[in-house]
Structures are given as C-alpha cells and as structure tokens.
Image 1 (cartoon, rainbow, N blue to C red):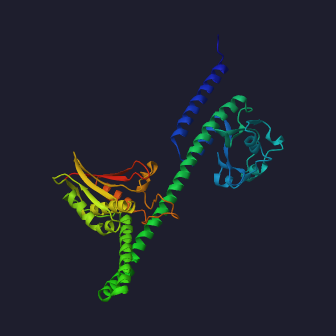
Image 2 (image 1 turned 90 degrees about the vertical axis):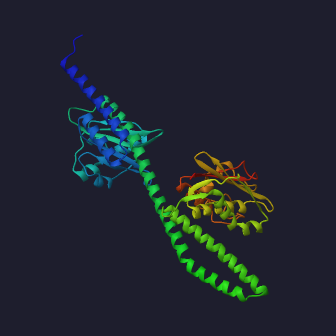
Image 3 (image 1 turned 180 degrees about the vertical axis):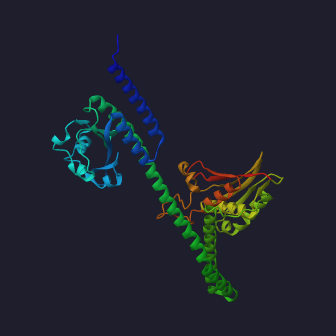
Length: 415
C-alpha cells in the first residue's frame, strides 16, 4: 500500500507528539518546583497543539473559584488577580462537569469570560479546555487557545487530556512538598522558641534559687524544732527545683549540640556506683532495694564519666518514680564483644508496647497531664538518650506491658 506524503507527515507529527509527551512525563516526575512545573506544562501544551497559548487554572478551596496559576506570554502574578467564577464561565463549566470542551468560535458562546481577555488585551478565537483530574476529584483546568492551522480536533483533545492528567499528579505532589516544607519550618521555629525559653528560664532562675538555698542553709544552722522541719522542706523543694533547672540546661545544650564531652577510660562499675550514690536518699524514701548484677572483673568503657553518670542517674530516677514501695531495682553490666551492655531493671508500672519508643521524646508523659500521679518534666530519658548516643552508644526500653516492670538497656563502646 502506498503511503501519501500528507499521510507520512501526519504519522511523523504524531510520533513527535508522543515523544514530546514522554519527555514531559519525565520532566514532571523529576521536578517538584511548582512554578517550574507550571511553565513546563503550558509551554509543552502550546507546542504540542500548535496554538498561540495555553493556561492552567487551579481551584482555590478557600475561596471557591478558579484562578490562573500560569499562562504562556502573560504575567502569572497579574493573571492570578483575576478570579474566574465556577458558574458562568467556560473554565468553570469544564471544572464542574469534569468534561472536556472544544469551541472553535468562542465569541459566540455566552459563557466566554471576557474579563480576562480585556485585562491582558488578548483576543480568544478558539479554545480547547480539559479537566485536570487526580483520583476522584478535579484540581483545575488546562486550556489551549487559538489553533494556528485550522480548528481544534478530537485528537488535540486526547493529547491535552493526557497532558492534564500527568500535570495534575505532578502539581499535587509539588503542593504536598510545599505543605510539608512549611510545616517543617513552623515546627523548627516552634522548637527554637522552646529551646530559647528553656535556656532563658534555666539561666534566670538560677540566681533567685541560689539565694533561697543560701538563706535556707543559713537558717538551718540555728533553727530548732518545728522551724527546723520547715527549713528542711524549703531546702528539699529548692534542691528539686535546682535538679529540674540542670535537666533543662542539659537538654538545651544537647539539642544545640553544645554539650562538651571529655571521654576517658573508666569502669562501668564506677559510673554505676556514682549514680547509685546520688539516688540513695530517694530510693530509701520509697523503701527500695538497689541490687547489683556485675561480674567479678571490671568492664571498661570510653566515655565522659560525669555525663554518663548523669544518664544513669536519670534512668535510676525513672525506675524509682515508677516502682512500688518495697520493691527492688536491679542494675548490672556485662561484656559483649566491642561494647559493654548495662541495664536498669524495675518491677513497677511497666510500659505499653506502643510507647517504648515515645518515652524517649522530650516532655512526653505516658499519663495524661491532668490525671498523672507521677512527677517530673518528662525529659530525663531524653537527656539520657542524648548523652548515650552522642558517645556512640545505644539505649532502648523493654517491657512485657503494663504492670510487668521495665528494663532500660544501654550499650557503650569499650575502652
């Protein structure tokens, strides 16, 4: 069968259109910049359909209307100022009905929205518009105007519909990325405000707290009887507040990556002993027994002794807080190849399986704030995790569930 020259040209044109659609698909799938996407779509649509221009109208969910997001040969900022109504406009009809439309004599159609043409001094003779679908909704309309060689055809409609479908997905992805970035920026700003507040509060409260402790200590020297008990309560409360301020300061330094570490070779038993010495009074108040589970030989680790002791103090305080009166807490360590494994085990409240990771998040409390029966800011475990991990260790919690107790395990690099 002999192929005519015109038929050959038509086949070549179709092949070029398909290749261009494939190129557009690759571009849309590799670009997440919304403005760049919009320009690529309109430029490609104009080229594929051999028309004078094309435009993208997107739906504004806050103000139910369409607006020009991009258009070839026009300032998108100026076009965006022109609202296109859902009712009484060609684009609005395409959007509402989710059906494409070909008009090769636009001026004869009463739905032609002349405000746009008057604003940008552009005369629309013919128009092809298709909806931009994504899943079960329409996000906008893709239009092509003024075909250069004749009228818009059904084939033009098919090509523009494929372009619109690809464009809708790409635009939706770009919008999701923008929303995610904005949310992340807001979260970072909120976190920065929180860190600044913690640093300021811990700094500003140190001076008046120091004065309170100083005067209370001075009064305790001469106080007797009931007055002595009152002074002791003041000192205990002030000491608790001082501990909270130190926790807040440590958390701020950890989050700002400014906590100074001075690692050296030290036995894990020495660290644990120092930590236990600090919680002796608290454990005695709750009638808790501290049990050691060590081997005969010391296990040496390469860590900052003071900071690591603080991490274990936080773990022990957590165990004390959630242990019933008269129970015991087991703390031990063992050699495991290139690291040392240490643990703090209690027989108290336990941890639900879905909370084993969340308990290490800053200010997280398992109990609701208005009904909680245990004290603390909820940052002790966060600080312990930060101190352990910054030294190349790991920390995690294990529990069989509520009422079954909990075990906090720590690995530290061997010296």
